[in-house]
Length: 423
Image (cartoon, rainbow, N blue to C red; front, side):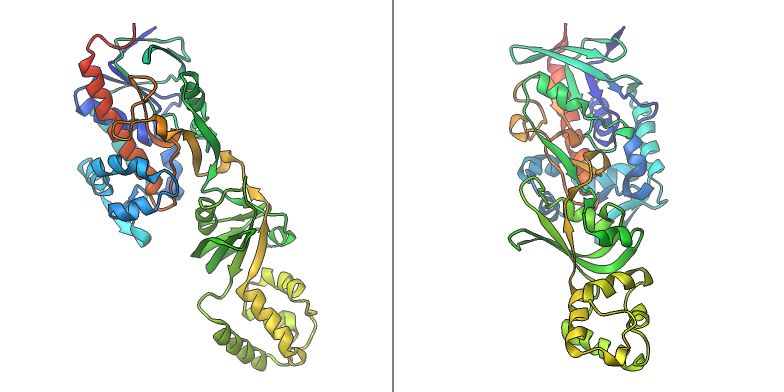
């Protein structure tokens, strides 16, 4: 089976669809290979099904949200910015809104509207979408010379191939990490793969005891073994049977390297109150509950499921009458409320991560075109590259920007080589 198309895109996720649409709009004959029955499967689950399309911020703030290799993305962000992303989708008929933290969502709160808009634009631009995947590459003298596909396909007249196969997170959506092997097979370096924006594991028994408890408006301060703070922010977190999860925890994980450091989570349960104000609050509560048991008095300070854990951590018996609690015991409670610490043992598997950290070494890719510096005619886009960002729409912006850059450059390459790079 021969597949005709002078630009081939491998992967029907955010980056792949943007690359295919951009190439087709620029005049390329585009074939998009996607192993799933439908394109955009991972997009359906982003932003809890709402799809945080981008972040409505300037270039400076965008770059600040990229913890590693941000400079590599400078050119592609300049060419296709968050404002361009918003205009792109609004031109496709998707109305957008900006929420807290400049996060941009479709007004419908439905990720399906984003996927549908992309799919119908692929059709309008004449992109041929095939259910297939690239399984092998060959190159000679620094030039891509052959492509094999899972269904036994070969490519005819292909001037460029864009690999946008995704990372290794959420493999059920099709992100199985096979693109790393393809890139490695033609000489590319693959930086170690690990999960980013991923839940954290802990051996602390409090996590199991508090399983299912969601805390809002708390402050999470993650420190490494030297006491250095690597992440500090207020928001929401969740206790699970394995450790910690929730928005704060996922964000914190992007700042952590568990292969080199050990970490402890310090949770301020009352961030709105400094120690003096919190102590005054405790005194008022204790005075009004002077004849109650300590365990009952705690119910006005923390969720009921935390009471037994606080009793254990403060060392104050639960049946102690409040009027018998000494000043130093009250101080111990205050310190526990302001610094509820949880030792962290690692991260959950990369398969459970929102995004993958690691991938194709960016030093081997042209930042302006996303073309391989090792193999002419080969391009990369999206999560396959060794770039990742914090939560808030920044990772999808990486996909849109790199996909756009790759789509334009691949079309130019193909048009300059009308007979195709592949025999």
